[in-house]
Length: 629
Image (cartoon, rainbow, N blue to C red; front, side):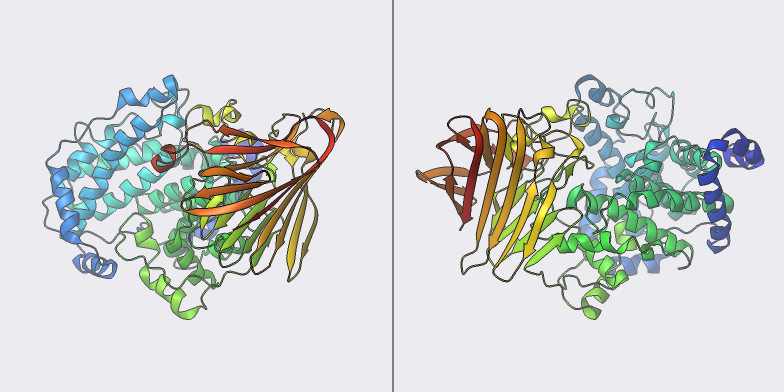
């Protein structure tokens, strides 16, 4: 294979001149490269034990308590099947009708085949799966022959599939990491031409495009300069592949690690100073989880000399998710999080062990064997977190002042209230949203994200009622929905805490710049700690001229009007009653929320919106909702 990197090394001075406008980041990367180069293991640092190291694999299976017979039987079933071809027709679905899932499912099975065959062979060590592994990598339909490794949803203009460009995405970077690790693991056990084909593909689809950016300072992949989860996810894959791939020059490995160090710090700026991410807990597990994988991979490769997890800006984002737990396994359902969003408990426990903060002592990562987590976040580290650190006890309240999120906890009733703005990643127009749960069941709640389509990430995103403010438990002044962007924001007017009650007051006016005649819209959450806790939610509005006004509550359950001013919301056997107090006559307006929710369980249900609406337009008005079990 032609050594692309040697060409770039020889022409580096020309590149620096040509891309002089990027001199500052380029100089920073080069400086970091010089520091990191002598710290790296020679010939890389892979995660997977070598195939011939039978003791290491036997110990891994023992520690993880893996059912090897079940694993081998699954691999034998795959062995009886032919390697499926690249699903080219399905790739075009997204550009034609916005559907990404047919391609992702079909292509995912091909990569799952590689993982299953490789892990089975590594565990058993008898050679029965080696021929099938070789076919999966370099056979007629082998992954090394694919026209692209990016997902169809990330190639809207079809430039990758047509060979007009090569970009790096969430999938291709992690495919490269996994394949590079297996090539290093089985190196001497696979035919040389198979290893060569795999190495060439990893270079083609990931390492060469990234090296071009790193050597020139011309970072053409948008995620390298982004604070979104793409940054650490892709960098983890690129760095992991570079450290594992056989025969890569040490200077190139060091350059990629150095580039990742400089670029990935941008991801950390996406967290508020109190550690919250607008993408929510689900994307915290994905984005920050990959950041942790990147940090641990580099730490091991440099024998502990590069420990990015100890950067001062890392600690609060690492701890924010444990602090955001409402109760049990219920977390804030915000942005594009699904209704069943939860924290990655193994990741949380490992972070607690590394950064010395309290975690749940009941966490276990045994019986899990996935890549790369099973080879990074070891049971030993998790057990240390349980043994050496005090158990984590949720406080009665948690306040994230920068993210404007308040969490209130009692043994039965739990509240999450949020202000924030409408310009966060994976944004919903939801300033002032909240979730009220009883015994861990979100009865009155944000409804989570929608199943991703081409529209979801386009100019038509907010046509979805699950994403615009109609599908959220927020006010609607003058029949107007909230706007999008950072200027559409809640402003905290006051926050007061005491033993008996807490109160959070938002000015939501800026979230509705298009509402006719709107002068002021104030939302107040008052949490009263009584023997039976009560949430008082009050909306006050002032218009220049009479306008319509309503406050909505959203639910996956049902609402029954038990009395003229008493509403009973019931979901999964739990009921929260709402007493309605208003300054003018009102009526209840029921509507089904349109859109396709995330997850088959939720798609089988119909989310509903219940609006307490004034009978006539008002110049000023007040709606007070008293909620309790």
